[in-house]
Amino acid sequence: MESPFRSEAAAFRFLLISIGAFALIVVASWINPWLGLLVFLLLVVGAVWVYLRARAPSLPPERIERVGPADERRVLVVANETVGGEELMSVIGEIALAGRARFHVVCPALNSRLKTWTSDEDPARAAAEARLDATVARLSSVGIEARGGVGDADPLVAVEDAVRLFRPDELVVSTHPEGRSNWLERGVVTALRERYDVPVTHVVVDLERDAS
Amino acid sequence: MTAHAEATHDHHGPPAAHQSSRVDARVLGMFLFIASEAMLFGSFFTAYFFVRVVNPGAPEEWPPEPYHFPVFVAGVNTAILVTSSFTMHWALQSIKRGNRPAFLAGMVLTFLMGLAFLLTQVVEYLNVGFNTGDGAFASVFFGLTGLHGAHVAVGLTLLGMVIIRGFRGHFTPEHHHGVELPGIYWHFVDVMWIVVYSVVYLI
Image (cartoon, rainbow over all chains, first blue to last red; front, side, top):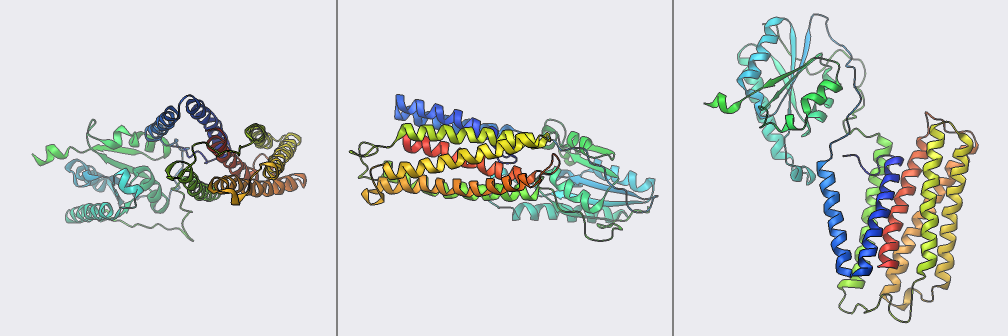
């Protein structure tokens, strides 16, 4: 959600909303102090609801500068718990077989909103690092060298950070199937396609099916 | 397989600035400053509500007899301050469109209205009929309104600098960050006054 003080225009809008909100609170308080308190609480709950439901503003498209040898594909792999999934390994293997390629795997440190707000991120980062290590080791076992890192809990921010350092010319995003994927519900894949001018391959990994 | 990996690429010099917070560093700085200011006001409001509500010896009437707050004068002052936010917004929109006369007019009007607010508050203090030693209610009244007045004074300083720079030809439709940031601060000061006026004078 856009911060109410992100820009002068946003701050001005916030001022107008504040005037309206406090006018309601004052009028309600004049009728009955408890009604005023109730209106205040309702407005706070409404503000929190709007904040939680609002999506971050979409960012303008970005052109990724091409670096490295012309015959080499630079592939950025972004994955959550699905990072070790069979479907993802298969896609990475196909890319590696098709020609010279460099792989950089990003595992966002998935965390709850409450834990993020309270800076309780160490367990999430440790879990992401463990997933990353296992994936790199598995790729290495089939002859594919890859490096990577733990990213921000927000996959879009994690990709943005990785893009600035790695400069990929292809993105591979791994998610759970539709209906079980928080990233798909949030439109992460669509946002990445709109944001970057490189091909984005979406891989659906069904961990339940892989396990059975 | 010929695949291998490197986390870095053939790039000379440091990488591009880390921008994943998606907020301009200067705006982020102002936002964090305002967040700290909100916490400062929050501590004063805590003291106010303690004195008025939680305190077992809180007076039945607010303010306690025989004192009263100049609600009407403060209401007029509120209208002046809120109007100054409109002129501030107009000034910024004008410079974004390259309309320098309107920008300067908006800034001067904003400054004058802010100054009128502050001077009216000084006159209000002189005629309010009580002082900080007349009880806890007076302390929190002067504390809250005085804290806000200090912020208005800081805002006027910022607006004054924008006006001076504006008359010296600074700011263009492309470069007006020096107007944007004082504008954010000024609106924040207005929002805080809306809260102060509602809570202290009206409720």
